[in-house]
Image: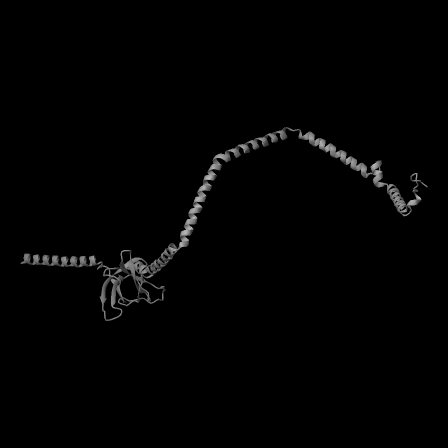
Length: 302
């Protein structure tokens, strides 16, 4: 009997261990840690955008829990009730909110907890409370709402531009403009040939003449360099000194030129002579017979 009871006890213990392992393994696969107690919070959404159970719960990008259940009641506007579990050591201040956000580029969804400023006197949320909720548009929603509208507007503008371009292409003025452009291109081609001819034939001649002129300039420069500039400058200085001496002598009262320039008696005598000659001419005009007597044998002076 003892052996029988011992076997039954072993089987019972083994069954309990198996059930415990099964329960723990099932919760582990679900992402629930049965050894660490959690706090439960709830939130209602109009739509969940593909949110699933076991989706992560973040605070500032750090995972602090998961979505446990998603319950729905389509008779209400906020048809979905989302139950989340958060680590017990996480304290949510009053006013915390649940946000439905995009989790990565593959389209997964997650819950983001947004915490208000927390002070020592702030109230805290209790396990089982309902938190306010809001939906944050993800990348796909942003593309659908903003970029697609702008892309549609851009496509419309492109269509308008293409239509105007087609209208311009059908206009005869465009063909005339193209013909003028073709003519200008032909003229430019001819001008290019002329320029090439000048570069190939005339420019070398001009360069040779320029080289010859440069050589002449160098020769002149060498001649100027070899000339006795010091002697020439000395002779010029001597001539200038002589001129200055003559000018000083003229300005002085010595010599003929000095006396002529500075003696007023010569000026007075010349002035008196001019007045006498002027009086004589006037008298000659008034009384010509006084000075000349005509006869048959020629003029006779009185």
